[in-house]
Image (cartoon, rainbow, N blue to C red):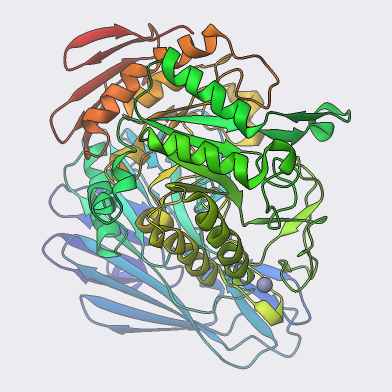
Length: 636
Ligand SMILES: [Zn+2]
């Protein structure tokens, strides 16, 4: 006993008893209220990642440090680790230091990792410490993961994982946090304090099941600044409880601006409640997708005519009209030099008429635009404005309808936004905007010394663009739900449920774990999240939208560049979605105050909103219940 206590550093208050192994920094947290013990994994892939100036990247354990010095008291301990046996530094061990600070306060443990310079031809790059906390072996438990819309993963879900998901990417962790909860309600909530350069490693321990921990990513190539995470330990909670803890944490960081607050400043936002997004696609060159040279066009006048027909046939009262493929050469082409609207479609004049008539009926009108991609055939395409990556190249893509493309440096974006959108405002006075990609891809770095951009600077630059749009009074939207944007973003394309890592798709043939609306449980009162519903393949999308009380977003036949004719079926399809609009009208701006699963497979789920509206969805039967009344989901 005495021997083991000599190896441990102790922190203690009246809730937590924390022991830290002096050498490998494995932490064990004993929750005095419940007796439960959360033990940290003994090893990880890289407590520190070092890269020699003449040697490779190498992940090292803290236990390999040859000098370790502890100092502190029962609430705070600091360890300084140095003399790393990095062999590519042939003259001797590296003497730069890593400092780790452990601090307890009530039911929280905060861990901060930072670096201190020293001699040695090597740099501290990244860190995957703290390693994951393990569920007790005999206890059942689940991980609560903001993977897409949300994922509930049993600790013994039968798959071997070692997957590191980036923060803020649509198929990654859309929000930077996670939780682990036992079957009896004891929980840990992981709340990173520094969130610009972070990914989350989901990993399987053979005995204790799955766990998660942060991976502090290099910022512009190295560690740069201290990284910090707070773990909150709970003696009794549920899944909703963990989501609300993240919400409070995000509120302290100023992220939680509600839709009701946003509506006060910009009345256009209030029109999102109870609306439906109708996407009208005017022009594209389909050579890329169809391997043949096909232009497809539908004039603004024709789009307007069909919209008015749909408005009448489906009795639409509140619509967000989202206009795609309106620029000089149609969809995705020539960004950021897309002005003027294609004269073949009707030019400024045709688009002006469309915007005016649609908005005079009280609907929102917006143009789909993009300031993340820059196309090779645009006049502005130049190394002066494109992203240079870590490998010293300007990365390219040739996947979208616009053809060859690179990425616009976030530091060079505002001048194009200002130029284009001021012109759009002058001609059209739209009521909203859609700026593609910003909130669905990760925060992008640029290594060009003339226009360097860290992820933090990228986030700031992109936020300023949404703020610029808000000054016009526009309701703002982008593609995904990355929650750094919540203060400046009113709605998005969607936050996708039912995700699965690409390399497990064949094995799982379905989602990872149980998909559930975790994102809505945190953010429903701050951002409108539509459910994208395909007329031909709706899948579960209607039921998901009902469950999280979103709005439908559709591109009915006849609105897709004239690929299919407008028929009465398009109107029928849209009319079927009315119940979702009605629910959104009622609770669209309310907080989601509760979620639970009513079976063990998550096929029957229930949500509750702050006005006590309760929604139950059964993915097996297609039935759903709102406030006790049963409905059958439509079959378009
Ligand atoms: Zn740049």
